[in-house]
Length: 148
Picture 1 (tube, one colour):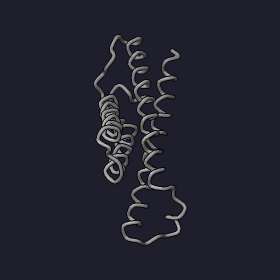
Picture 2: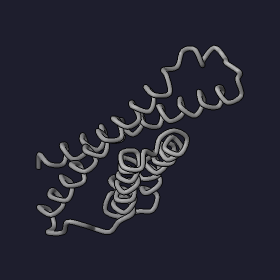
Picture 3: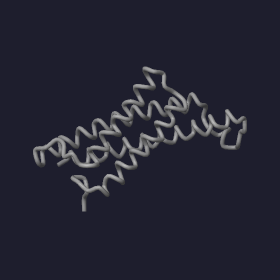
Picture 4: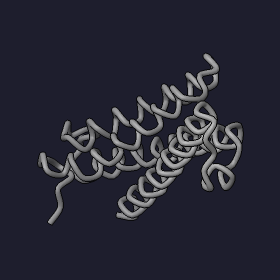
């Protein structure tokens, strides 16, 4: 079915957007640390401003969440066409749902609670850790998404 490549491509680009959130979060944390310590290394002068890094993280999280949402929905439709089930309750689906929740909370906190800076950056780092576990770790646990 044409839905499978659409599903996997959307998720690939969602994870790429979450990688950008991770990189922006690391840049924020490095730059904030150097500002607090008042020690400015060569890398400090090459990084974008804290505001710019925050904007990159926020917009990348929104793009990633949108792609993840459509990717999960496409996968559910594809799975349903194969065996009549939308959800297989396997580790990759569970951790993808947790990833979806984490990035939704990150976006909501950033927009409603004005949750910026250090907390949001650490949540961006944790989110990408969850992405990596979803992509690699859940595979080790078996289930519907283990191929080959």
